[in-house]
Image (cartoon, rainbow, N blue to C red):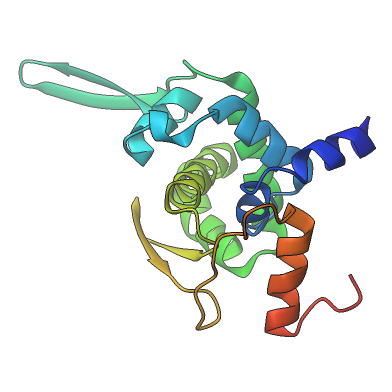
Amino acid sequence: MEECLKQKSAQDERIPLLIQLPRVALLTATTILAAIGDITRFPNAKKLVGYAGLGTRIHDSGMTHSSGRITKAGRKDLRRAMVNAANHAVQDHPHWKAEMERLEPHLGRSKAIVVIARKLLVAVWHVLTKQVAIVLRIHRMWRVRSEPCLSGTYKKPAQGQSAPAFVREQLDRLGIGKDL
């Protein structure tokens, strides 16, 4: 089953774009794409976050304004995939580890993981809408700035080029991953 999944996902040019994100592997990338479908359905990252149910519940009434837990109104599989990726990212990725150390003391571990899952989902929206492989540096709360990775902008795969061939070409260009 896994081999069949690899063959089918190798035909999708969006898979290498998602795999570049920290701790997003083939199965997670496929789950994300299956849940999202066409990314153009979401005009901004906030809509995608709401679709996944990772946005905060807000109550506004007169002079009262309060925000609470996440809504959980959305795709459970997408939310679970993003929380799983966030759990793994905080273990070994330096940026997400630092972000976890910053958030955990005042939010607790579970809420900090949800915040990081939301930030990763915002990164997914940016990667898929721009259709380029970029490194997203996330600053403070929810502002995202995209920068070229390793002082070079990646291009989209050539027409008819498979996803593994595209990834191999990019790794060779950077001179890394020769043993992969």
